[in-house]
Amino acid sequence: MTEPKQPSVSSTARDESNQGESEAKVSYYRVRFRPQGREITVASRIADLEHGDLVMIRTDHGPEPAVVAGRAAAATEPGMERGVS
Image (cartoon, rainbow, N blue to C red; front, side):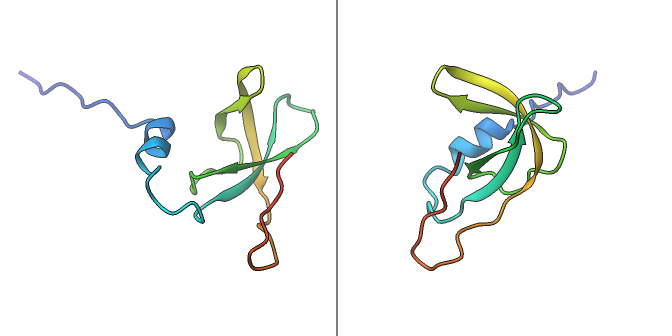
């Protein structure tokens, strides 16, 4: 008999399990909702996203799928929060 496969941990589960960690560990990304659409900047506690990754973005009207276009710069001034789109 074969052993049943363990379910993989989704990025959402990883994100929620790290919720107790420092809020300073935030990464910024540029994402697109449509292939040729404009890029917006988002913040995430997931640090290992790469170009082309499909993610779900929490918007004011519900979750929306988006594609990571790349990383975005963090704030350059100490103590200054980075704005997001």
